[in-house]
Length: 308
Image (tube, rainbow, N blue to C red; front, side, top):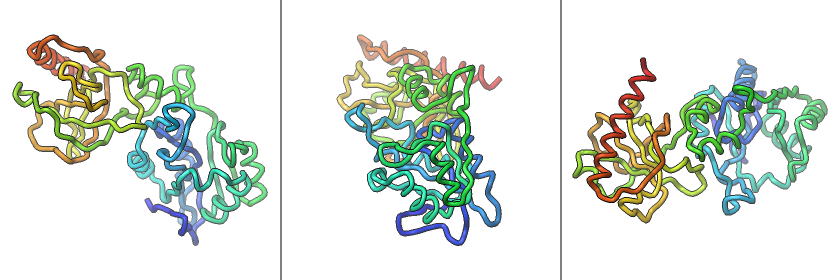
């Protein structure tokens, strides 16, 4: 995938452009992007236009949007879907464009679009002045085809990033994963912790979840852990470790089943598969140790069930 910036364009190719914020790259987003990728050929390249999600603003959450994915992970999804070009500028640089300025300056002049595809709730231009109907109108004026895809539903419910965030926050991770079309998780560096688990024969990796990322319900999850391309089963506690009274929060602490090795400083991806129980405090470290052992056995049984 080739990254376009403000100084580059895609000439001599024409492009089929997928438009959207694509936070989460869920099943609905994948349909939009796949429509653009499917239009690609020797003369037409697929492209995605999206803003860097960490530059978007919101009235909630201290003015910062809660992202489902970091831009790095989001871009990896685009590449996996077969996108040829990505143009992902900062929101502030384009937020004052009118809808027509966006179509002319970005879609036509910069991306050389011959086709554009979006969802039916797509908005663009200053103060979200343009909608899908307006995009079709401007596409006719500037000489490119526009396709508007209807919402995708799951069990009668519309798939949306907003709904997926709600499910993740409430611990309904299995339902969120079905809407996403993949297991939700994080790719974060491994930090040094108190290393108490090593003294209990349960060594864990610690990953600090940064501000701006959607927080799952605090508690224990069955997880898959990607270590250098190999998937391991794991148990992850997300929260503030009330028994140990850790001041840095929130934290994802993961025990990787059948793994031995030093992962400090490496960016490790974990996938949340099943919610086990809410986070709770224990009166003694001995009780905590026993609970960790039970959680590990639960995870082993869970993966045995889903793999058979």
